[in-house]
Length: 152
Length: 185
Image 1 (cartoon, each protein chain N blue to C red):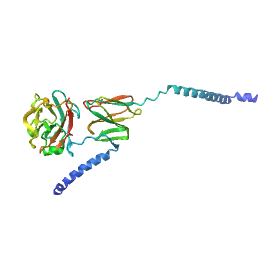
Image 2: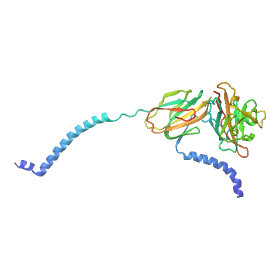
Image 3: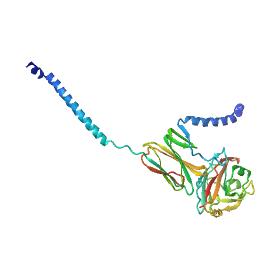
């Protein structure tokens, strides 16, 4: 009787209630964790595809255009020198004939800045050079050297 | 003051070099050499004059053609048109006979705005071309005989070359472009 009387004491009831709640929470937590893990696997968006860079030559009849692609930050091309932090040559020198487009030259990781250097060839020398810096690039696109010397 | 006047000419060159080194040093970014290197100027160690249009190796128009360039505000200037590639040595020696076909120059008394010339005899006199026979090494350009687009008689794809030269008020060559090629349509 004394045991029953002790259990019915408010302090003892509080302890029992706490224990019951803890047990419930633990078992429920396991369910939540399992449920949460399952939910996370289905709702996390897939990583974006790496953008594909295409280069096109519309400079004009007979002109062959060469290009390089560099990745990094604070990118700049000046007088034959490429400046940048974490500088990497992503695509080495390639050439494109008049009117051609070159696909799948290289892929650039999502959100990576890059620099394309264009050089118009006359024989073995570059007679016109221009460049384009692209930041936060997120999709596939074509960069075209136009007849007026700009890059579209 | 006498001391400074003796030192300054030497300091001038040294200071220019120091400025160039400082600019490179201040740029903390990594650098790498591109395989795409600018063509050297027609005459080395001069400042660059730009040839803007027609672009290098491009075709000119079938009709009247305007040439756009920038002689960078030089006090005097020359534009020379050749039917073959020439060297700076040939230009300096005046050996241009049979090579120079047209041009304009403030040194020959032609009007010169430093930025445009038109292959069109109906155009303003301010932007006219004149014939160049190169027979006189010191004065290859005619002062009176104009040169028109139809005077470029080569077949389609024929190459011509052009260069722009800029001089200071003392007629010293200060600016020069590359020798660039264009073709006939």
